[in-house]
Each structure stands twice: as C-alpha cells, then as structure tokens.
Length: 80
Image (cartoon, rainbow, N blue to C red):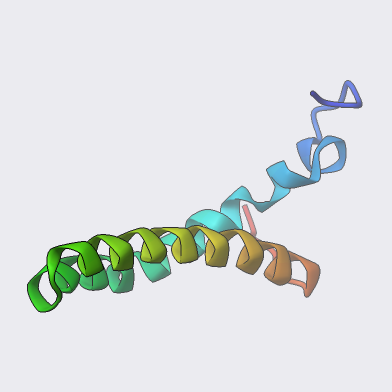
C-alpha cells in the first residue's frame, strides 16, 4: 500500500525505486546462473544437483535484491 497519493513511486515506496537495478543485475548475472544450473546435473549426482540448483536460485535472488539495495545506496542511478 502506498502511503502517499503520489505519482513519484520512489518516494511513496522505496522498493519500487530499485526495480531498474534489479533487472540490470539479473541480466548481468543470469548467464552465470544458467551455466551453473546446466552443469550441476551433469557433474553431480541427483540429490546433490537438486541442492546446488536450489541454493543457486536462492543466492541469485539474494544477490539481486541486496545488490540493488547496495548500488542504489551508493549512487547508482538509471537514467531514463
């Protein structure tokens, strides 16, 4: 829920200001994640590959979220 009736979503809800950075980080990191997800079943047994796949997805999501918070806090701006 937005606290303010404002068109400036970044002021009304700070999470909405980070989606540009999250998309950019996701696009940069996605090839590395896909390689890990592709190689895990080939190199590991089934249960270990499932664990590695799950952990990779969780780490990918956390890196995107906390990376976006870090980059926006330290001056990254997406120019529209």
